[in-house]
Length: 222
Image 1 (tube, rainbow, N blue to C red):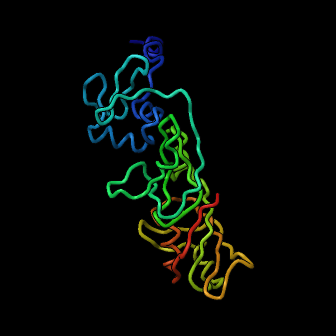
Image 2: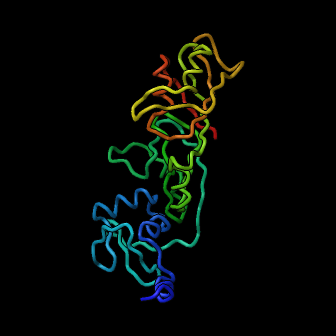
């Protein structure tokens, strides 16, 4: 087959992981995991090659036994997640999840990234897998802004350590910017604005713990 014939034959085909993410099932990174672990079939056959291309109009694709279809309408939601809510669509222990706040949405959306159980603030939910991948992937270094209420009063030297970088689980972590919020603290605590461009689990809490302070309250504001 020459190059021209191949271009014609590939017309309309998309990579399997891209099709799964654009169907609103999950992000492309999670789609890769589902393919690799044998949870995906194409026309009744299990496929574990992430490079496989499919025809969205004619191929039958299932994920974990359920047939999926490409979504034409992309949805982007911004949720102010309360504390004590799981950043998942379901929880085996029966705890509250963000799914309860989007139950009226007819299209299936999923959270982009995560906020831990005790944290609150801005959380994006979407069915656009490409968008979700760009927001979450470390390569794109999307800044994330938090307000942290911390025990005690970190010194300027303490805060400078966060910018220089501290070693936490997963390696060294640095803040892009750290700023003490004037007139918002109290005798027992300070409020600190911190911007990071990663999204490791409990990263902000672990960074403050490394310099000797507990995070009492954490809000993502941007």
